[in-house]
Image (tube, rainbow, N blue to C red):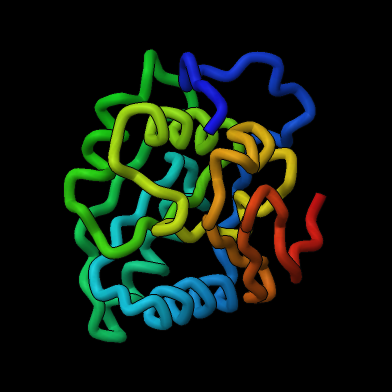
Length: 173
């Protein structure tokens, strides 16, 4: 992993602003199917604080619980913070089978950098929504730091980072 000296990002211009949409039904179905396929029963869901993020969290939690799964915790993080340490510690405290993450790219990247730096969070136990499936968003953290992370597309397709390579059907740039 590249040395991360701070979760705070500088020079992130060109990344689109926080999204305002909620996950599609296909995304929610794909996330829950991937989680079940991995043998998960307990999920922790983390997100930014935009309305679309909160709607996505509710949709995933409702779908997951309807299937018989447990939501170990939900957590929101701010777009800007002094360090994201409090949020990162709370997000990992429940020790779920998998973490689900959504939000704006910059807020997510800074939270993820803090998770990598200060907690037991691991990309291999994480699924991202389509809101975070842009290469520019992933590059804010660095593919080398996200080995094993999985994401879904708006249409329900899945992708994964393996050895700094994004596997198909990744199509967003």
